[in-house]
Length: 220
Length: 122
Image 1: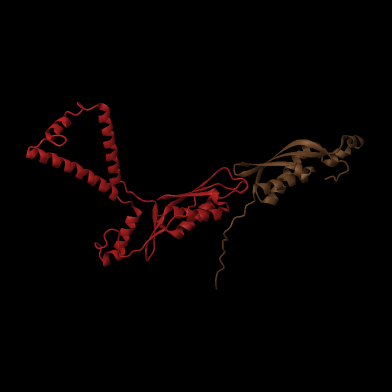
Image 2 (image 1 turned 120 degrees about the horizontal axis):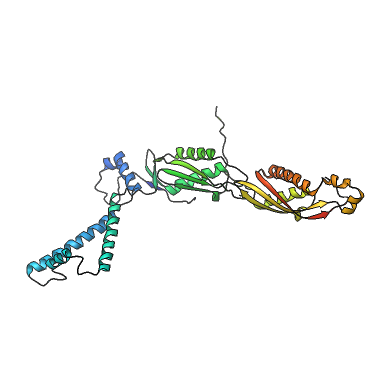
């Protein structure tokens, strides 16, 4: 897999997207500011889920307020009277078709699980940090994979199609299909890829695993 | 004093299947005394090594000349079976040396005989 993917270089300038005024110069241009930017770039944002949750809560509260106000004034209820609604909820299995009840329950459960997972999972993006004295450098995993694939291809002397590299947070998987009649040494390949990875020094440093296919490619 | 570091040049040399096949056909033709265009060669992969299968005729002396002079058989290299077995090793060595690829096996199927009288005997 040798995609050319974009490389994001984030300057450690004073500006931060969204609220430029909040972070003052000395804080955001120094080390703490850079750490914050790197953390923002390597984890995915929860803003979308938070906005959806807030809108749902606001809608429910707004409707409850409306119905309560309508009853306090003594007008007929808009959709349902709060007292009747509460009675229906306590007597719940009765009065609603079971299929509808099940469907609504399932939808609520799925939404709840989605929100909980979005809240507690680390939400890491497929990126690594490169150490740099001047700038905060974030690299997509595809870019690292592409560089390692090129190095592995040179070390093994095979064509592009015979090498596939998958980079995850903690592991680099190098899948190689050798050319028939030209046996390859897994150790040499591993050493070459590890040397390249050491030069690159991504953070966190993944471990290298080389998978050699048992069958080769004829005439490649 | 600078240390001369060995530079790794980018690039990849490949020997494609067609070239390998031509080499195998030529080697088989040489070993069995037939023209290269009569040899059919096919490559397979065997656990990362190359397996060659050949379908080829073999050059034999005509029966009348053998009748006249029974030593003709020996001068061609003995019975067809023995010559095929010997040819296997010869083809394997020759192809390995020319292409640089490691062969694991050579299968030969004799599909016919071409009669060569008075030809050069190997």
